[in-house]
Image 1 (spheres, rainbow, N blue to C red):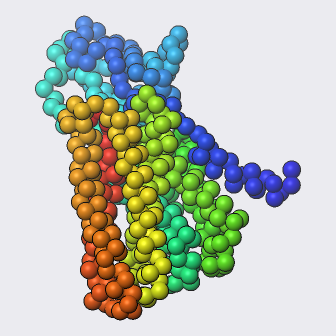
Image 2 (cartoon, rainbow, N blue to C red):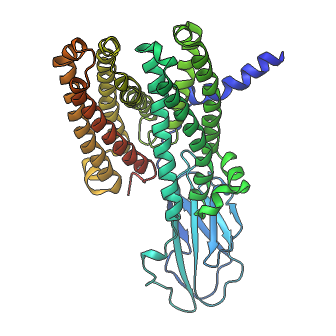
Length: 438
């Protein structure tokens, strides 16, 4: 095999993995039973604690620790399908004692955890309160949400911005604001993907913010299945640098090149798919439909949001009548297509992940989903105002050669739409770190 073919194989492997790989349907891993049971009052101290989960687990993904922070040895129990693990307790002293457990879901990297209390020759501690249950560090969770928000925004700006320049505004490849926006989107996308690996590792192991920069944390994440997706996403951002560099150097001629368009499409679809594989779309009875709907959903958001920001930041400030006449109607049609995809795919994802009206109304995940839908509805009202301006006032703005007073209402509408979209992305980031059953 020649070096060039080997390099091509290395580049295409993560791309094919994220484009063709479909995770199996599964909810987050949960504890079913324990032996001894929580709250048990025992006559003598047990040597082992047996935990039974609702699906097979890897030993490396299960942690059992004492309240002092000592990690207990864990092994799979023979004769089962990987759902039962055993933790060696050593020789606990008589009296009340407790352990905390956590398990990382093999598919999406989410962590479940809990606490088990026992009594040996004495009553178990039943009045410990909910605050005693282990949970991820609030700072780590906020950092993970912030990284997800920045990652979603970067993805939308990069994919949507490339589509905007390629399909609607080829001259934008030479516009400094458009170039800066695409470069910023790529930089933030790469940095948040790298930082997300450390944050995911600390979140899954209930670690502190300091653990997010440790080499051991990255090593633990990258050896698990969710880590493969995260690593592929980082590599895809590296490949995106090649696509972006070619566009910025070649300008409109490159954007019209079939070879460049095929490469850009492949990398963008890979980024969209890799981002979706870290979410909840695989949960439910139809994981394939969930994966397809998530891809359509992210693509629609990117076309809408990325084009919207490119329009607000790079096109409107120029106030050139010819550009407004050529670009704005085209973006209106592109955004309408994106919104239609968002709505259709969102309905499929809601059915796939939530599954019932009761879960929609009485779980944190369902209420966040309703909040996202409500904000999205307000965004669509602002979008309708923008579309109405295009229908009734665009011709006048062109006749006035992009007069500031004529374009200003459209600019206000676009700015309001952009700000509300950032709120939608923030709620989406919270949804990704929230258990659908909570």
